[in-house]
Image 1 (cartoon, protein in one colour):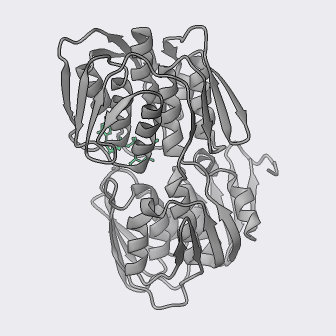
Image 2 (cartoon, protein in one colour; image 1 turned 60 degrees about the horizontal axis):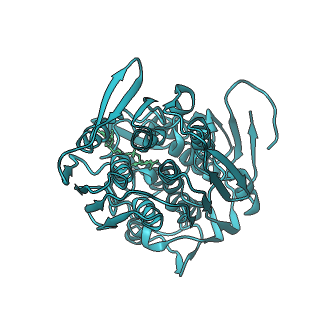
Image 3 (cartoon, helix red, strand yellow; image 1 turned 135 degrees about the vertical axis):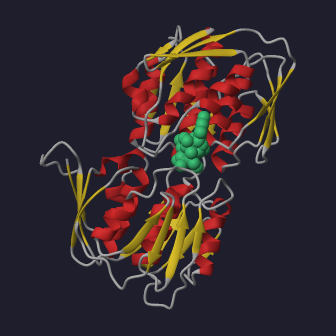
Length: 430
Ligand code: UD1
């Protein structure tokens, strides 16, 4: 990465009207590997994790595991997470503030150490992101939590019931994962989580835990049953491909692809995206675990309606990228964000590039298609808006400077290198 210090925030300088031609390989799923790493606290045996993306969120989770007392070594895309003499019960503010998924260590740490102190999480600025479902669910498993001075203090007591029912008010991904993971070691207790999230990354986590010796039923459904066991053991596990990275590059292909091939995808996990592309008349050629795609912008495309929803609905994590595509399609598209309260901040930035998008009620984007976008200085506010602005910059006329772009390294492995391999010119400045 070329390094030239302009100010303290990273920038990408991207010239527009580029074409992507060649092969892009999808990395392991960020949203799988993070809760899986948190679950490693539950065993003192060695875990080998494969297909781990080299992204800053993984580095943050490594820091958290190390501050818990684990040793973590990375060799290429494999992590070796080793036994430690003693697990610390305190996780400091610094790593936790960077990433919300770090909170998933709280339940496992409390189960293992009986007490814990974990900083409240940060992450992308996506409106209010409380952890009440986590805390309430864990309470039913015997974990009492007290929040003081930005930390959660946990204490576990044996529960008298042999069966615990938890019903989530909303199918939260993080809460499902956190409760599911923690419940695996509540020995002798059957935990039933109703209205749980069904994201593929949750299946991946549950498969990982079962391989470690957990007893989880109902994987892939909205009712997961966990029979608590005494002990979990070390394993060797490969995480699934990242469907959001894949979706981002597929949308890029629809914008600027020229026989772009995207390899190592799981098409089943991307059904909501593919069916939207079909509806919009965007062509692609899907065969097994790869998809070939060229720009469809010279065709008559259909405006559409996008409503983000928990899986298998349209993912909120692809909403901003789709907004870029829809902004170049004749007619009016409406995009409703139903998961996060503050995920439309990209509208102002896209409008600076010549898009015609209005926000209504803080969660509805009304996108009227324009003929072209034009390069401009813009500001990224979160991980997915960084990716979306990059797509906009690649298709726009002229040069775009994306400020505050470092969010992108939280979730996209070697993005510059991958794009350069398909003929894209971008420059990063620290
Ligand atoms: C995960 C993903 C993120 C994705 C999101 C929704 C990871 C590491 N991150 O985030 O990429 O965008 O799912 O698919 O997997 N909520 C509460 N109380 C809680 C928990 C959540 O009110 O205790 C609310 C949130 O504020 C939000 C909604 O529920 O409005 C969904 O959040 P959740 O599914 O928990 O998202 P994350 O697990 O944080």
